[in-house]
Amino acid sequence: MRSPRYAPAGLLLEYAGRRVAIDGGAGPLQGLDAWLVTDEQAELMARLRRLARPSGLTPKVDEFSADDLTIEPRKVVHTSHPAFGYVIRVPQGQVVWAPEFLRFPRWAAGAELMFAEAAAFSRPILFARGVGGHASALSVCRTARKLKVKRLVLAHVGRPTIRALDSGWHPEFGEPGEDGAVYLLMQGGRTVKRAA
Image 1 (cartoon, helix red, strand yellow):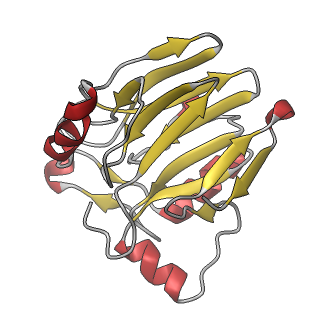
Image 2 (cartoon, rainbow, N blue to C red; image 1 turned 90 degrees about the horizontal axis):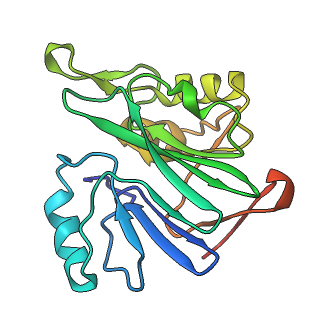
Image 3 (cartoon, helix red, strand yellow; image 1 turned 45 degrees about the vertical axis):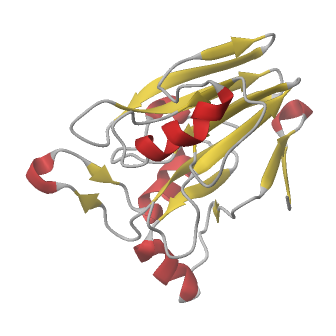
């Protein structure tokens, strides 16, 4: 939320005339069918509720389906209360949104595209009393490759990872996300990135 460089991590999914927001908080969105969140107790929730109010939506952990689009919440280990990521399925393949976790979610294996945790860089950030934390970007990149994620985008980029990027670090697998970037999932699971 308080990144010196990035807007709050969020995804706007557009598919077959449907628009679903997941997390976010950078500004009001129009024409949404749903607004999903990964953590109903997150510090951004009050802001998200205000942003969603004009559209009559309530941001919440939920599933969404329409035609051949399915979005399902899946548990992640992150904090002392329930937290989630999402599996997004369309005929072109599977996308995973999991911007915050301490342990890499095994249910993300084989995804064509995964947006993942990168708040920490070389070692995890652990919360007090062992209630959770953030996995390191280095371990996320290694595990995603091992579990055959085809394309990895680091979406929750924290200060330690920003410092590493500024020092010239480039992930061996994966890439840092960019505010406003557009990712297209093509037939056969190929992904294409273009500027917004």
